[in-house]
Length: 490
Ligand code: SAH
View 1 (cartoon, protein in one colour):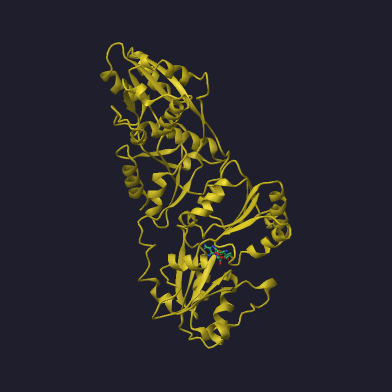
View 2 (spheres, protein in one colour):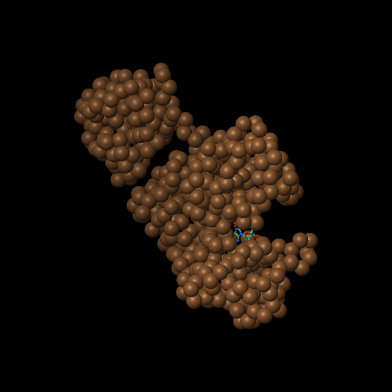
């Protein structure tokens, strides 16, 4: 039983701390608010109870007292509770209030600080909050005015410090904040900036002075969440802008997933500045229990001469099964190996075995054609792949009179049904099963409006069968897919 206040950082998944991520993965219950980034939301484990306390019936947030009580109740049930909050839990996060009741009830707790938007927002806008030549202190202030009353800020004291002023929750009081600074004696030409959706790939930044910023923000319809930064350091924001020059800055794309783990494609696209909406991957269910088909096939491994894998998950499940059966991989010494996909071959190599054959195209047809030229009379293939694998592979092998056993070594289950996807035209697919999972998990989407960027012909055919418009990358590799995406989106 433990309650952990975890700071999720300002939005960019990369700014969640390692400790925060660890606590999220271990949680039984997660209570989150609305400032937690979607990529972090996608990381929440399916086994945990997820409670959105930022939204409630009619869009009202759950009252603070109720959140405090929920933390106590869930902890008393013996659960590991994570209270996930945007930025840092103690920076205008009411983290202190949430701890009070835990202390009263003797419930163990810990705090995992987060990267606050007050510092990371300026950093992503090219604004260093301190600088030897410009500001020797910085101050974080709430611009939130209760019930439309004027903000209760001591502007004279702030202006006297000469430091950088960072206002949170201030969009609706931007005008009164700027006027407050000027009436307290600040130079009316003092540089000032507003950063909307900081650290997200749809971040916007506007720079002006304390006199001009309110109208600039209004003209551009700046909305919450935004930060207001006042101080000479804002002058540096053009020279130090490292965000807007990224090739895919301001572009968004869906990345469909067919297997768990990190997505190299998503990481590459994020690095190029794209806003990536990663679909949840299906849950893998190994079919390797005692008496399973794969165990029976492995017991007769001497009768096979080829071992065929069509996915990285298949490789891992197979070797886990070998180990669970108490066998030694030397039992496989007589086998040739074939893999569909570079990722699959890479996973096999990690297990100490080089793949003897990889077709250039990542599909069953190419595999069957290649193998039919390689196998000798009397050879028998052991194909280990997902349940309900495509039939073209087995059909072609049968036609070519090649002996084989097609064994389902794992199954997939949808983790989340009916994911809501953003209004994005482009979706990238690295396999036909990614197309299948994507189509199975989205809610009320007109698929004909989606432009599917596909890694190969069979992936594209699958996307087409769902009515999507398709574009195929030149080569069947992630790098080539990224190049195609860049050409299309820029
Ligand atoms: N604990 C949070 C702040 C919570 S108050 C932190 O440490 O960052 C909520 C305010 O934070 C918002 O009104 C906005 O001013 C600011 N904020 C949070 N995330 C932001 C983001 N990604 N971009 C800009 N401002 C953000």
